Amino acid sequence: MVDYSVNGSVAVLMVNNPPVNALSHAVRVGLKTGIERGAKDSRVRSIVIIGKGQTFPAGADIREFGKPSKEPWLTAVGNLIETCSEPVVAAIHGTCLGGGLEIALFSHYRIAVSSARVGFPEVTLGLLPGAGGTQRLSRLTGLPVAMEMISSGRHVPAKKAKEYGIIDEIVSGDLLKTALKFAQEVQSRPFKDRCLRYKIVPNADRVEEYASAAMMQVKKKYKGFEAPVTCVQAVRSSAELSYEEGMKRERDLFLQLGQSGQSKAQQYAFFAERAVSKWQMPGGSYKTAKPLPVRSTAVIGGGTMGSGIAVCLLSAGLPVYLLEQNEKVRHIPSLNTCVSTGAQPK
Image (cartoon, rainbow, N blue to C red; front, side):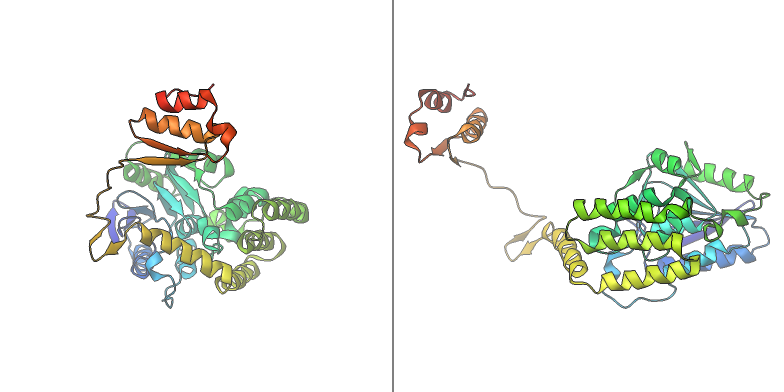
């Protein structure tokens, strides 16, 4: 699931778990093994993590949802990356989401193509990033951006991610070749200061101000939802606690959300929506079914909207039955004319 190779003095860990290079147990094992192997390889002076195919790792493997987790945990893999004796470069394309972004944040450098997008969509499943995302992102972007990104789950384009400080460089051309060159260039640089665990959250003394503003926004925008509120609380802890204590706080909040009814319901809806697009019945399936031809149509309500819909259907060459119980509307001459001729009512 993770291909290991050495190009000159650079080890390449290529995640190969199509279609989205999800961080399955096998991928986590592969990353752990690859980092350990690269650190011991006398030829290697830097390491590149990259995704094969269409994307950098795009998050957790949904097939593992609801099943007992297996070691190594993603946080343990990330710690191994961050404490590696050689600098690690994350080369990003496609969608670097969730656990994928956490892997990138554990890396010492992050480069990306201009079409890449990054984000933490866990909130849409009633969860929060559970491998350091809430503690690390704020150390790069500051509290307001981290709180908004994580509580909304929005995907951030590479250009904006560079403005936020998430991406170090936006590159063009062949990503692997560019990553190899970049990894060679950083080999002589000290990189301990690139480890986010040692960075201070910018403007941490204004955490109360930022958290209050963010909480007001999420309670208004996502009224009744628990996860966005909890995301803000988790990011807040990055400014109020040490890195280690913040990680424990994140874990506690993650487990709290995972056991909530809302999270279970949101995950059920997520899987249901995916399943319904691949339905199967004794007489056919989504692969064999063909749409039935539309032979006639009906519109209930002959007001402005209803008559407009009727006209659109007539323009498409379909017969229309227009049902309107209001006698005054039914006998408006202009309505009868437009329905019979297919002209838009004035």
